Structures are given as C-alpha cells and as structure tokens.
Length: 257
Length: 304
Image 1 (cartoon, rainbow over the protein chains, first blue to last red):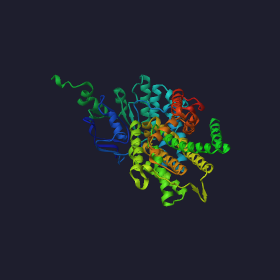
Image 2 (cartoon, rainbow over the protein chains, first blue to last red; image 1 turned 90 degrees about the vertical axis):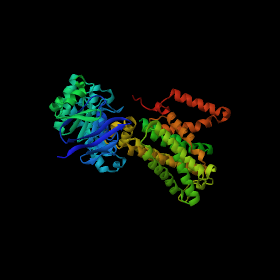
Image 3 (cartoon, rainbow over the protein chains, first blue to last red; image 1 turned 180 degrees about the horizontal axis):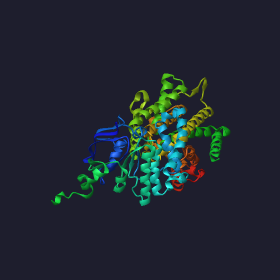
Image 4 (cartoon, rainbow over the protein chains, first blue to last red; image 1 turned 30 degrees about the vertical axis):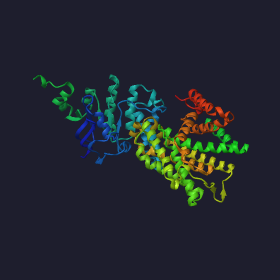
C-alpha cells in the first residue's frame, strides 16, 4: 500500500535554529499515529510544514503522491489533509452550526471562480447543511448547535475544533494537542471521539499530544521527535522501551557512569 | 426592515439634486458620488481587515486611461470607461499576487508605495501623462449619440455607476462570498483549514476595489475635464479612509454616508472661510471620539 503522507529529508531552519531537521518518514493511510516529544521538539512546526503554512527549507512532502511543496494551505486542505488547532479558533457572531456548515461548504468555494459552477455549488450547499447536522450528532454538540461558538466552554470549543476539521471531509486529520487543557472526564471523551473518527468515519489521524497515557492507548504507532529529528518510531510498546524516548522525556543517565 | 429604510433614505437623498435643480447642489452631488466610489473601493479592503493606501493611485490609473483614450485616440466614452475599470483592476491583479502575501501594517505600507509610485509615473512620464501639468481638454462623456455635458445628465450617470458598484459590492460582502470575507478578516488560518485559498479571495477583493476606484477616476476626469497627478496622491486615499471611519466600517452604506458628510461638510462652513479647516477638523475629532463605530452604527442593530 502506498503511503498517504511521505516526508523525504524535510528541514525547516529558522535562522540558526533547526526546528525540523532532515526528517524522513511516511504514514500509511489507516490508523492513528501519535507525534510526541518535549516542548520545542518541532511537532507543531511539522504540522505547519505539512499543511503548507510554513515552507520547508529543503526536502519534499508528498500526500497521496502529490508534492505539497509550494502549494497554498487552502489548496492542501482541499486535497483532504486538514488540521485542527491547539488553541480553539472560532469566528465571532457565528453559531456552532454555522461553523460546521462553513467548514463543510468552503472546500466547494476554495477559489472565487468556483462560484461560477452553479450546479455543483448548489449541490455542495445542500450537502454542507446535511453534513453539519451529521457532525453535530457525531461529536455530541447537537444541544449547542444554535449557540454562539465563542460562548462555548473551553472543552466544547476544542471539540468544535475537531468537529470542523471532520466536517471538511478529510482523508488525514492532523490534530494538534486535542486534549490539552481538558479535565479528566473531557480527556476521556476526546479520546473516544478521536477513536471513533478513525473507526466510524475512516479518517486517518496524526495526533500531537502531551498526555502520554492517552497517546499510548490511542495510537498504533508513535513517532518521537526531539530537536527536530525522529529519535524513536514504532508501536507504543517499542517506543516505551527505547532509550531515546526515555532520555527525551526523563533526561539521560549516561553522564553518571 | 432597516435595510429598506436605509434604501429609502438614500434614494431620497439621491433625488435631492434633481428636486432642487440647483447647479451647485448637482456639483456637490456629483462629487459625493465620485468620492463614494473611491470610499467604497477602500471599504472592500477594510472588510477583509486590510488597509489599502493605493486606492487613489488606482483611481488615477482609471482617470488617465479614460482621458487619454477619449482625448488622444478618439475612443468612445463607454469603451474608455470600461478600460478605465479594466486597467486598474488588471494592475491590482498583477501586483496583488506579490503584495497580498503580506498583511497588516506591511500591506498598508506596500500599498502606500504602490499608490505613490503610480502618481510618480504620471509626474515623470510627461509623454503621455503630461507631467505635473496633467491633462487638459478631456472630452465630455458621451453615451451613444448623447453628450452628457450638463450637470443633471452627468449626475444621472454618476448615480447609475454608484448603484452598479453597490450591487457588485453587495454580492461580494453578502451571501457565501461574504462569509469567506468575514473569515478572511477574523481568522485566515481557520478558513484556510476549511480549504479556502486565501490569496485568490484577497486578490478578488483587491481587484474589485481597483475596478471601482478606476470607475471613480473616469467619472472624475470627464467631469472636471482636467486631471493632474496631485489629485491622486495619498491625501485623497486618507480622505476616503476618514469617510469610512466616519460612516462606519461594518456596513456598505457607511462609506457612502461618510462621503456625503465629508464632501458637504466643508461647504457648510464656506461662509466662515477663515475657520473652515478648524471647524472641519473639530467636527471630525468629535465624530471619531463619540462615535468610534461611525454614524452608520446608529442605524445598526447592536451586535456583540
């Protein structure tokens, strides 16, 4: 099976800082992959690179054999590669349902000239309304559908963030710390939601997460980043055993010897 | 319906000059219409949270295009008018690809440079732009066999163009395009993740604004019959920026209201010519201090 996402020797340097350095890995089109590492390891920069918000200094990024380098972030999203954000983003004055409807519709009007395709646009309009309702139901935000998104509690805004990404109909969803700032119960619900996005909707996920127990339970594969490089890559059991993982998180003991 | 009320009020104001049938009122009406167009073109960029300081320069591009085509090449006015829209729109499209990548203060500065560069071209290239002396003897606007030489007829043309521009703008800021524009203003990052190609939408807004500014330029040139570079420098842009602030940035009739007030305000103080600038400045200060969202906000429902 071909890789969904393929990174070949990708680097991003900010001045002298190697945020991401010479990264090579690929991710198959199924499953949930965890991306972990200490603060400053380059996880979010990696998401920014994949989604086109940041241009790589060198290297090639492919999604389903399409080279993403130099593509507009919106165009990349329309290929089915969509991210959710660490801090909730909402539009003032719009309800929860509005957000999901726009998330579902905007891929049909990615460029102004798409407005001229009246037939496919009116179909997209209908689909967006239906899709918004489906996603509301799926993520459990139906009761809040008519509320202003800005007035939602933090945990529900995080859910909405993920819901918007789902509503765009992605193939691969990059979730940036979906459980950050959530309490115990909310974290459990988020974990269940991520799992059902994978199992019921068939959307592959790459999840950045600091809550290691969540990552270990959720992911079939875990990639550990440190200082912009992959230091461990494997199943949760393999990664847990690896020296690189231990030293990345707990510090090295070798100095003592 | 508030919107209906607004249209009725504006319709009534637009009918004032023919009702009074006074040449001076017609003159003010024509200037208000032309300034409204330029204010509207700036308004579009404000709608996506960007300040373009190039609008007067783009207006100049329209004015010179229209003037040169009709005067030197004998092109009929309707065709020259279309060209006066197309040339600045094309310039905005070409330059926009480069400068629309930046935002905020940097965008304002780049567009400032762009506007001044356009004016500089008019000054430096004496052939065909006439240098600092500008262009004289610009022919009257014609429509088929008619010559729109009189003020009444010209006023009718200006009102028609403003209405057309309003219709275009309403399509752009309403409905689904309006939702995209709202997203551009509030969170480009979020709507990018929805699949919006931000650059192409910003370009559409910039190009539409350029076209409307060009229309204003053409109407200006064929009304005054004389244009010079200094009419299109930064002062003219700042003026329409003030109109937007006064009228209200959140609504389409805001810039028109602003133009109405700002063009006619100096005329009200004309008898006090010694204090005209002072009173004008004080009025602006009071308006901005006490109505930060513009006068148009009074007519709008309260929004959070």
